[in-house]
Length: 166
Image (cartoon, rainbow, N blue to C red; front, side, top):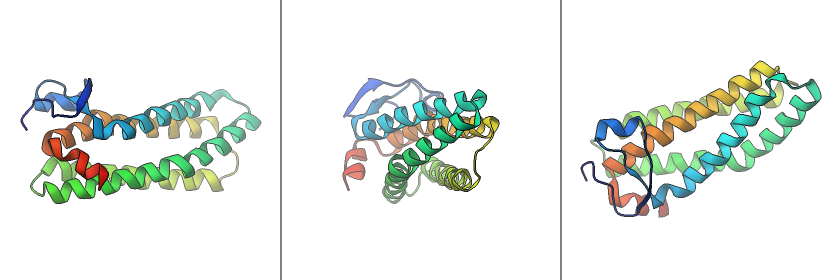
């Protein structure tokens, strides 16, 4: 498996996480759907950050819209990633990087779920609260794209497709 791109990889994906494996790896096609979800979530995170200066009515509208997105899109995405990491850990039980990445991902998901619940029960949040949630979501996605997915591609390689399809 080494640092060479695995079969099924298409687009180049430069990242900080790839540095430990040498040259940046191309994103494996099995991860494209998750990466596409990340693009949508990054757009939503940007809207949260931009809501910092919005009035209360606009912040309320953004919260309502975001919570619908979190329920219908992010939660199923989180579940899919958690299943993928559990399968990857079973396939590569000696991979410290998969174990550590999976633990961080799970902690991030738990923290984001708690933030979504707080958002749903808190009334109209401040602009700073929305900005902070947007930053938290962005940081989580960047971690997965730049580090976790690189680890999966390196440590699981060509078997990624069977893990995603399982």
